[in-house]
Amino acid sequence: MGYPEISRKLLTAILLLVALDTPAQEDRGGDGRYRTLPAADSASSPDYRKLHGIFAIQSAVYVGSLYALSKSWYKNPFTHFHIRDDRHVWMQMDKLGHLFTAYQISRYTSEIYKSTGISRKQMILYGALSGFVFQSPIELLDGFSPDYGFSPSDVVANLAGSALFAGQMLAWDELRILPKFSVRPTPYAALRPELLGRNITERLLKDYNGQTYWFSASPGSFFPGLKWPRWLCFSVGYGIENMIFAETGKSASMGYPSYRQFYLSLDVDFTRIPAKRKWIRTAALLLNTVKVPAPALELSIGRLHFHPVYF
View 1 (cartoon, helix red, strand yellow):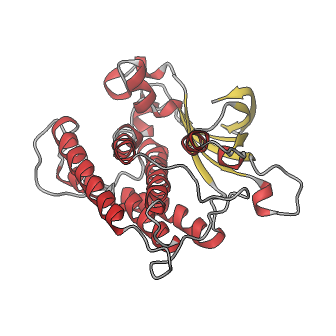
View 2: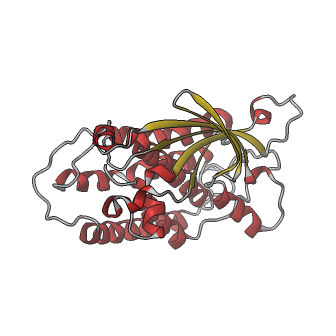
């Protein structure tokens, strides 16, 4: 896919989450673990009426979002279904966008399902399926679009994001590796505004040069005996530079040799900070999507750079 996935897929997911009113983490203990939810055959049975209502609202919001996207995003009429191998574009930044979006949808929707009282495994399964299924019809629409095409690598990235959520929950009963996102304005959008954005909002969504995807984790989560605050994380980031076309060859031909950037920084897991108020816990859940500004080391073009504050 040529354009950032966060610009339309995560935006669609946000509509879903707002409609369902994401609950706070009331079943999470002070250690960050999810407490076991009652099974369907226990004394406290799941609220199936609420569960069916969530399914109905999800379906309605999703169908409406798909219809809106089909009318607004795809400029040209649909044609025959075709496959397009786009693994090489944007130095795989768009694949990280797929992974990030699928993970976040899985994470948020699992919180919604948890409020119905279903079992822990059901909550994880429904959340992971939501993360993957929520994006799949969009991939099909791309397959019928003359501008895009169905991308198998996009589907793999979607699956990887859902698997990253489900795998951690099944293995550790908590999320220890947190995909996050940060964005900053760059001068490249002014060179190709039709591709990278004509205004500040479009540029933040479409200009991959200003985006960084991160994976944050706390040593205290992996080594319980270590005296390290579990809310303080190390974060590894990935970004790109000098991309004014989706292909590196085209960018280089215009005098912009593209290159990859790797970062090491500090981050905060807001859900590890104890809080009694529900709105604070909900805010922490939302804030865990974004990497906090912090000092960072950058490795690019064989050189090491230090940023006093990087976002």
